[in-house]
Length: 148
Image (cartoon, rainbow, N blue to C red):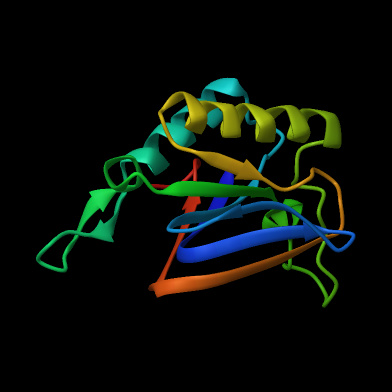
């Protein structure tokens, strides 16, 4: 799975002019399932994200995790993270998991974060969404379960 994490002071996702998910302090998480991913992959990614020390402690150092701060996560499915730009100028998306599998893994990932005690809001799988956020720091981290 691939994920882009952005530390935020607020974030929201809107579909057809209606806000369907929003958080205050926490992480905006764009996530993409790849064909080789399974539930164990989603579980490992959720656990890693919950423990990443991306938030400032009292000394101003990034020493606190999302779980430690009581922050929330806004999780949005983002198949374009699987873009193949190796040929030409139009990205290909054949490296993304098929929609049924991707949706199941996306929902499982969000459920795993909830199970770790993190409040989670989500986008709508497959919808045309508008995402708004205020990146705090800015802090943006890219994760790929195939790479460290």
